[in-house]
Length: 395
Image 1 (cartoon, rainbow, N blue to C red):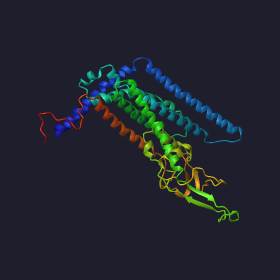
Image 2: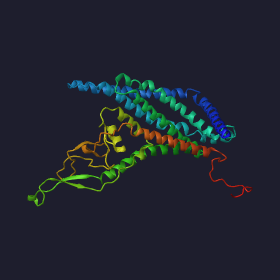
Image 3: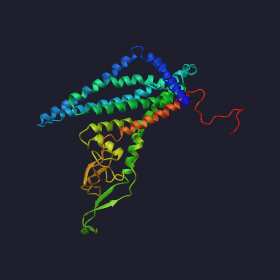
Image 4: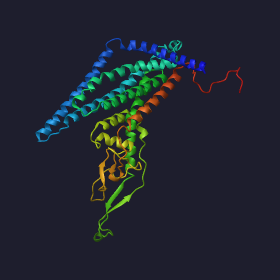
């Protein structure tokens, strides 16, 4: 047992040494020259410009309210929430495209320069090479994320955002950087050309962001048209009908809503979930979006039994359209209505999506790194079914 533990400790130390060696070498090459500092300056200038524009828009909105004799004592908090929302969404979009760009050529460039075999011949393990490449490539992205903290702290001047809300937002950013960085290094391990790796990586990025969102929306819209509870007016008896004009309910078969797991690798919805926790209005647009994804009503309550209960267009139509019952208290942004009798007090929408997104991306990152190590290794040392040599006998 001691020998095995000593071997495990030696292996971990060797991997750590390899990560430090490869990471130090890569960081020295990346941080030399003015490009990194110019990119950092441009990144912060872009965030600052959006912050100033949001502030001016909120100031103009407050002035318009005051001009019409209205006032909002919570206007400062709304300004802070608007600034936080803008910065978080903008940083998520930037990280989604910057993290793969930093890692997509980590292995393929070594193949193009014909130096991968020399690197594999060193005492550094293949795991150390991959993790060192990943860590050094994501180091600059992490620097960009951390450099924006003083700018994000401006929201404390206005209020409306707690420190734990900012912590949640930056956890989403860091997990997004690790996840999409692992995706880039995986495609860099598969291909031999950086152009091919870049194309495949960004194709996967679009599929995980735009593709999953559109698929979920299309699935939800198709099922919402089949799971409506329609209330129509029966024609009176004097018009040739047998009814008295009272509303009659026609129920259609229930169809299960699209699964939440379809969006677990979409960081935009994780950011929306964090923003929903900041908003004091549980029926805001962000909370309605998360309610539509998770099946949990804004503020509290759940949709039971994970089926859209009412029509997405409440109201009365004299031509026989749908009408929502009087107990409906809200309408979802993704095409469902909210009934008051379906709101238990023990449920909440806060922090219901982004922790699952973080866990899903961390698990996916581990799988992608393991596959990258297997692809980079020239000896295929993790092959499960190895071919027996001639000298080996069958058991």
